[in-house]
Length: 112
Length: 114
Image 1 (cartoon, rainbow over the protein chains, first blue to last red):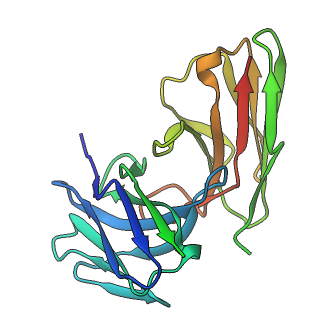
Image 2 (image 1 turned 90 degrees about the horizontal axis):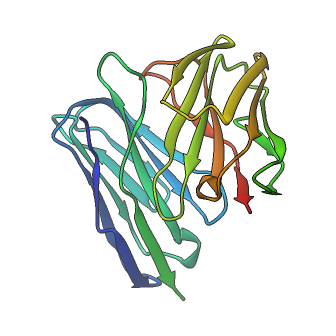
């Protein structure tokens, strides 16, 4: 069974601080998506990483896919209150089922 | 445009009621999904439709009945639900099924079963 563990589970930081969220698995994924979800809303796709070692930037957010395509990280620089939300990684299996494997989630709160 | 719409936004229903959730996308996507999300948990896949045909049912109880009337619409018919079915129900779509295609989610329907 493929699992995606995210760490930390919860994070409360002050505005302006930097943070990194990790998404780890023992399985290989063909691609990995990162989503942000606000309470009572659906997940919003932030980025998709496909190639091992790939780095993508989205304003203050930097996403990296591990060389072996088993893990990923999300780094936020100078966090803002608007970054508050649930961050979910979701891995697409390499073969067979096309059922996304969702990570356990990281709940981020940025205090003004 | 990467918008998936869902109605209603909120739904309260009794255990003997019949109701339906609706989902619509106009991105030309041929794969559509229903997910269930409990509080503070990641979404759990319920059903997958590919080219308007049901391709995955994740052992969902028969009180949930999906329907895909056309390539843009996806319904979830609800009947005789239990209080533990209260959750956020999310619809998603992708260009096709398969790991190469990103899923886009709707805003969800918050369902409360009383």
